[in-house]
Image 1 (cartoon, one colour):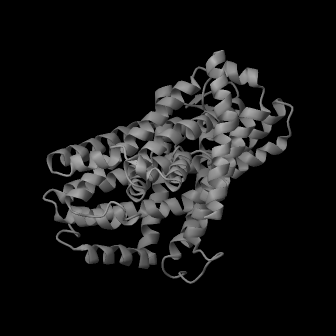
Image 2: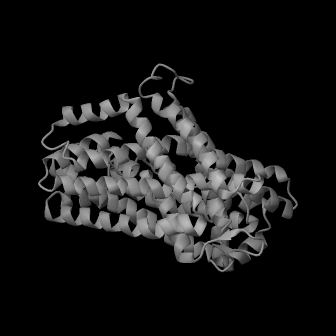
Image 3: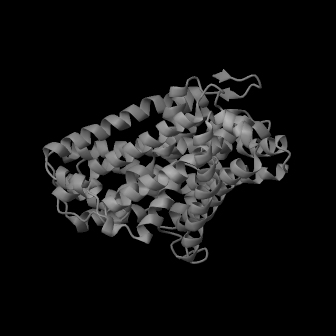
Length: 450
C-alpha cells in the first residue's frame, strides 16, 4: 500500500482512485433509484433537469470534499478540524466530518439490507423461480422475502461480510483492487443487457422516453427531485469523498478528475435506463411503478423472456456489484476514523464497525416483519434511517462542506490548488459560494415541508 510522508495510505494510481470514486457514486442510486425516478418524473424532463443540477450542485460539492480531504490527509473529523485550524478557524468544524461519518454509518445499515435482496434475487432468477409467473405471483415472492426475518438476516449478513472483507484488505489492496475488477464488469454487463435490448424490441421507445425533450413535464417538483438525486448520487455528504480525498496525492487534478467521475456516473445511470426501460416497454409494464420496478416488475419480464434466466441473473449481478462498490465506500470513513483515533488495527476497526452496522441493519430489516408495529415518529426503523440521512444528515453535511470551502478557506490557495484562471475562477466562485449552497438549502427546506 502506498503511503505519504505522514504514513497515511495513498491510492496507487489516479486511475484506481477514479474507479473507486465512480464505484462509490455508481450504486443502487444509479441502477435502482435513478430509473424509477425517471419513470415517476416524466422521462426525459427529469434527465434534462438532472444533468443541469449535477453540474451546478453535485460537481462543486464533490470537488470541495476532495480538496478538504486532501488538505487534511486524515479521517473526516480530524481533516475538518485540522484544516479549519490551519485557516485560523475553530476546530469545532470537525463536527462536519463527524456528521459525514455518521451519515455513511447509518446509510450502510439499511443499504446492506437492500444489497442482501439483490444477492437473494440472483439465486431466485438463476434457478428459474420466476419463469412463467404473473405479477401477483412475483409480488407475492417479494412480499414473502420481506416477511421472513431469517431470510433477510442471512442475506444481509452475507452482504456485510463481503463488504468487511474488502475494506479490511486496505485502500489499495481492497477498495482500489475491487473497483478495478467490478467497475469494468459492471460496464460489460450493462453493455450486454443493452445490446440484447437493441435486438429484442422496446429500445427505440426507451431512447425516446429517456432523451426526447418534453419541456412541458419540467415542473417544479421534477426540478426538485432531480436536484435532490444529483446531490445524493455522487456520495457527497457522507464522509466518503473526504476520506477518499485524504488518500489523494497532490499530483491529481481535482477538477479534471471530478469531471471524469461525474461523466462516468451519469453515463452509467443513463445506460441503466437503456438496460431497464426496453424490457419494461416490450413487456407492457409500467415505467412509473416506483421502487418495485426492480424487484417486482423486471422479474415478471425476465420470467417471460426467452433468455430471461440469463439476462435476469446478469442484471441482479449488476445490482449487486453496484451495491458492493458503494457499500465499501460507506464503511471506509468509519474504519479510517477508528484506525486513526484508537489503538485498533485496520482489521479490528473493520470488524468492530461492521458488527455494529450489521446489528443496526438487523433492526432495519425487522421493521418489515417482526417489528412492523414499532415506529419512530411514525416510521419503521428502515424508513426512519432513510429519512434521517437523506433529509437531514446528507444535505446539511454537503452544505457545510461547500460553505467551508467557499467562505472559510483562503481563496487564493484554493484557486492555486484548482489551477483556475481569473475568468473560470469567477465562475467557480459564483457556483460554489452561491448557486450550490442555495440549491441545497432549497432542497432541504422543500423536503422538510413535503
